[in-house]
Image (cartoon, rainbow, N blue to C red; front, side, top):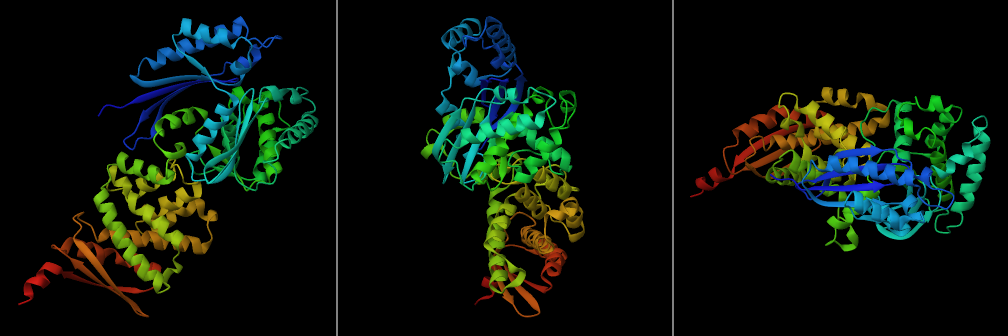
Length: 516
């Protein structure tokens, strides 16, 4: 099947980047190439605010190398955008002409409003956060937006970025004084926006500085899960990273695990911006979005036909991507969901397992990806299922929710469950661990009812008494494989519910034939 490839070049104040995407079956974009050059064009603005010849030549040379990489792909669409430094340069018209002449590309210079909008659009189309404040710190500008119910309400671009704020830390022997001055400056700047103060919503951060902050935090914590997108931090976590880095020299910073060498001199001002904004708005938390301006540019194109350029359900789309990628059987999934719903409702009505609507939402998702690892190897499918789901970015799911999904979708037995949850045991209360074990046992049980993927089981009649659960299983074909598997595996659900389960399989067609 021929893939569609798309490319975007982002000419930023600090870095220039080429990203190439392929379009997956679900219609979403998947990153396949990411080439970065630390050009620091901001440093080439002269006293007249023109980008110098040296800066222009560096930019052209970098674009030429990007062009060579892009030639490998048959691109359906290509976009070249520039942000703060080119936008603020007096000779921007000349720069555009030079790019057209030497590279043959039309370079689009984004306005402040457009740059903020694309950051917002990337966040709302890759997370399930319905209200928040986004922040994107570039080298020469900082964009903040406020959205509610996924709709953009406010946006602003500040004329400072990680490179311009370096001046506060120029005195390497007095970093704390520099930080105090920077924080005073930032508080004054942020307070000019009345819509920022006291919002008490999550901050969703975009860009390389935010990624580096998260990578350092994960390194310090020895964080056991892979992935950065939708990673959550709090006020104290940001302060801890700042205090860890503040006494270090530039040489020491360059060796910090998780910190890119080219950001060693800009990470402190960037973290100060995040922390100051956190305190100004009284944020609930700080969340990283791996999707940023470049993704927002293409989201706008891919969502032309959708209201407000928004995907209706980010998480649902992500689950559908998994279904396509691992060739999962949608007919079976829908059948299992019906059986699982029937069992879930019966247990909930009788108060067994303290089940909630949130539990059902997790179970419903689990039905899509249960035993997904069988795609790789049937013998070790539980291990593959857990690893794939726990360590894969799923847009719309925070890390803790991704882990929950992995635990129930990989459920094989209590021993394996304990093995998988062991590194994360402190993340859950005891009752939460028991609940996840129960949900895993439920989904394993209902998948046994479709062991041969023929949708033999048509209906369940569940009778629950004080000491047992009696389930009549109505089938429209020979049910012996399903009966064997369910009888064999029901023990996991019995242990989780502390109830014995009696199964009665009934062939509907045979019953009909016996009627005179």
